Image (cartoon, rainbow, N blue to C red; front, side, top):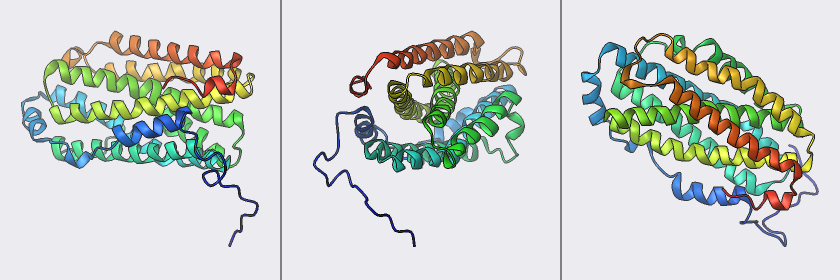
Length: 295
């Protein structure tokens, strides 16, 4: 049995919990907005719509869904090292919020698998839908960067893990995909259950990304030299993340549902630049200023 000596417990100490800092504000939002059950989504309308779709339209939806399904499962599998790293640093408020991450990513995994099983009826292996750029990030970079924290939880590795997970996988790939997917379903008035679930997913992911911006800002405020690692990592992974969009559109001519590649790419570029600019400001900010960030 491992005995931990000289343990300091925050919530029984003089300070208690700091409800003003961004992670706790996000935690309170998660309790209020993140409580939804994938089993309660009504797919009856989706089952009717599915029967009316063409083979090509079905293929696009299966391809898109397979990317979301694998992405949500991957982050569910790979998130624990980040939670453990934050916990070992004694950041109880951040750990409390991160517990909602794992729960929510698991729900997202359940939701998409339920759509596949109950609406599409597809039982084949969907991994052939995963392009080379997608595999590079989800199969290689994501697990490697997060699991590196188990042996080296240094600030530099925390930066690499958070950029990969929060800024690229969630902030570019997932957010762009969900934005385009939701808009497509809304414009075409199809698959109402899928649309409802994606709307809920988008809300969850916005909190995850906000925490990533906070974490990276906190780390940079403590050590401005870490900005160079963030910049290098973002620039290295941003191109393959955009390539996923190109590879998604490549098999179809024309692309069903009036999906426009420029809509995806423009949204990704704008969100990428906005978050890079926000994190860069942290080089000249104090931790107190970071803790007053809008969420």
